[in-house]
Image (cartoon, rainbow, N blue to C red; front, side):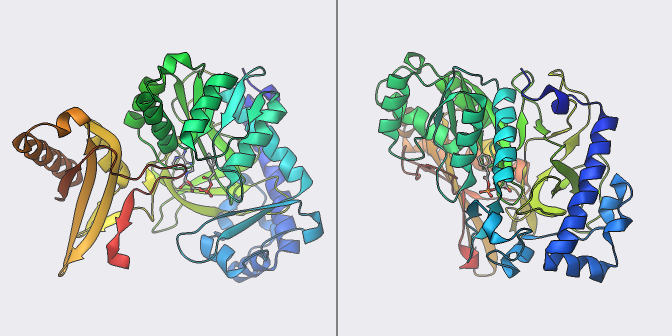
Length: 433
Ligand code: DLL
């Protein structure tokens, strides 16, 4: 099923014509109404009238998180505050949050995009959507909420936390769709198992998981433990929240980007050159329809590539590959670049290793040291010390082969790594403290 046939299956030529018209409109608007955009464009010597074709997008300066921080809280809004009916914010790792705003029409656009997203993931009227994304300043909860209502499904606005109660409600209300972060889905699955419940006693059919990186192995694990289809959804507050891109249930291979609202580009994060389709680099987005908080060439820091081949689901929208990681997540260990996703990939391919881990980086003298704490199953944990040591050595070996840098592996007792109710914290980098 497709929510908006017209836009989601539009021939590329027609789509690009719409994109150009909308791009010209948004560039004119930000130039006229948002001082920081006007200044950047003036400094770069670009005028709104220079945007004559889609490729001219690359003449425009990038926008970064620093720009938003410098204009905290409302300095990048393109409409007077009287027209802003909602704000959200994402908690930065340091200091002030990033604040974003929505007009009435923006909320309407977002609901439409989330209705498309849910439909793309196989959700329909009659479904009971158990929405365990956090409600509040985070965009996950309310984003899904409005989309599910627009679709005509039944929403349970449960938010995150109190997992036992979540499971009771899921069972009693007959929830068919679970929406939360992938790490919270695993946490829920674990609590179901512990309470002796058979997941087949639940009516869950599909889960829509995002807001943090997760590997294919983690998908397989969630699907197996909950007996559902697990779909990846991507988005970020600065662009709109969830509703930027999503996998289709038909293929589960790459996330369709709603390109009539957002133009994606992939750049080399160091040279800032735009890369040809298919190459891996940093994802950059320009919003085409947002009123309160339009963004031009926003550097997401997320790493992926674009897939332009047509999809069997019938959508003509380009896809982006599952996010590999973030440029600022990348750890540099003794000069070697390491992504947490590579570590997860190795860990999850080893039997007896649970999908709960944490990466601790520290400095001993002048040397970076990385320790991976990973839970093992009850059964393995009760083995002899020697067997445990052997397993730890094996994981260290496999990690070394894959990462090209050595690390220490510490096997920990089941349940010692903190469980997540939202975005999981995988890395503790003590070097920065
Ligand atoms: O996480 C919006 C969202 C809510 C997306 C619910 C999906 C579901 P922020 O809090 O601003 O917004 O965080 C955005 O999270 O730049 C990525 O680094 C990461 N992220 C989001 N979705 C995915 C995903 C929401 N599917 C930041 N895979 C983004 C990997 C993701 N990383």
